[in-house]
Length: 303
Image 1: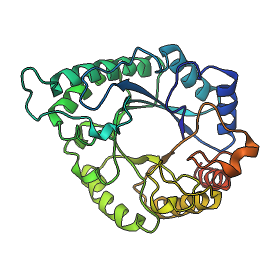
Image 2: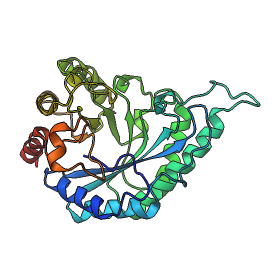
Image 3: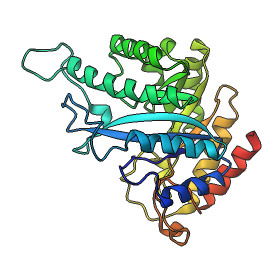
Image 4: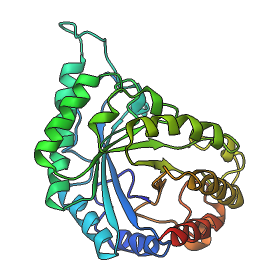
């Protein structure tokens, strides 16, 4: 399960966050993906303000890792960059060739590398089981040389396995999968579309002979979201069964493929809504919803 998103300073290490971790432990989750975001101003900005609010502090990150461990979970550490103006990180990008006087890739990569390598050191200190070097950076995906250099620098400070979280439909467009240890993707595929997408992804996984997981996957509890599971802005009414049915289909279809090694569901916040509010909650978190039982039963069957 993805825990703690978006990582707002001051909301981790609290009694509410402790209660959230306790509730998550009841869902048979074996891996906790501690996930948080740092902000750059807009997609054309070159500085990532990862030391500043609202991003969680290093101490909060260590607290979350240790809290997951105390509950018997292995840990994935996933630092993510977001845009403060609300633009999706997939659109972060610049001219293909750096131009004097214009914001360019070189400056952005310097800032991004500093951000990622700093958190890789935390991953090393805390013996994190898997480290994520990026998430859904679609326009940046083609910058192969920069990704390979980032991976080299991460490996210099972290000796565990590394993955990159590509976006949905991008699995067969990454040219540097050989440089990571695990192939991972966001699996927000519409209901009914799983078989075709799994067939496509399988060719990539078999070609590289590496472990694979859906490091993001899930569906909001909203009517109509099974057809648009990646759309967190979709305006359907609360529908807990839609989420449960989608998760059951995803587990059935993807779980039958021997090359799919796991799922990291989206998501479980550090501050949960009240149990009695679950029926009206329209978000991805399955807490106190029928979807939680689907998750618990599937995970328990694979433990």
